[in-house]
Amino acid sequence: MNCEESLALMHLYLDGDASEEEAQQLREHLKTCPDCNQHYRELKQTESLLSGAAYELSAPAGFTASVMANLPKEKKRAGYMRWFRTHPVITAAAVFFLFMFTSVLSAWNSDSSVSVSKQEGLIVENDLVIVPEGVTVKGDLVVENGDLDIRGQVDGDVTIINGDLVEDSGANVNMASVDNISGEYQEIDRIFGWAWYHIKELVTF
View 1: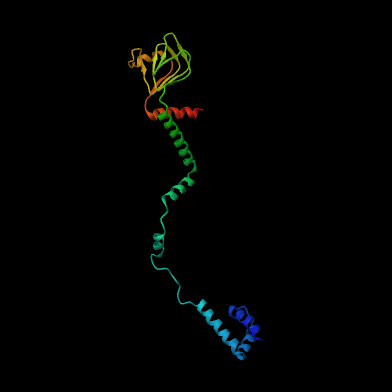
View 2: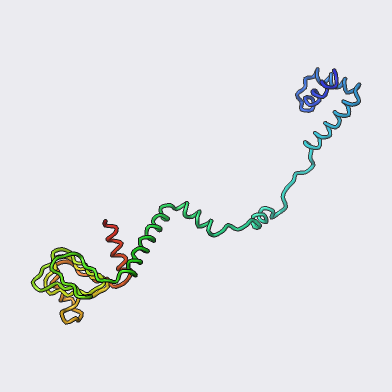
């Protein structure tokens, strides 16, 4: 057996994979070759150090908690973005209503002129919409940013937004004056009521 064959056989022998015959050949060679004998002893010492360690490494007490405490804190924005990604339906609904409410609020602030639904026979004087005597308005009547004086009849619902139902004299009327309305009557004079009315109108389309 030469030294090259001996080196290959040493690894097999140390791993326990050499046959009895190969082990005997290696032992005979080691007796006659000082270099291979030295190399074999070094390999055996290395194997003993690796496989027969006297202790196991372990982290000191509180090591994990200390490492976690020293990690950089997650930014609030990242936390919000994670929440948005895990709740897409709620996020989409919130964005939808935010844009809708913003557009309605913008309309509230920008549009202060009198507007009235399109029915024939109505008279508009400054901020006053008049249903003249002898005239019957067919369908729902909506008056926005103005007052309404009903001297004739309204065959439908009446909605007044940011205004009042008045008499010819300009005074507010009592509920008996709504007898000229065949449908329902409502006044909307708060921003949230106004916004809700317009949101319902948008949704119905």
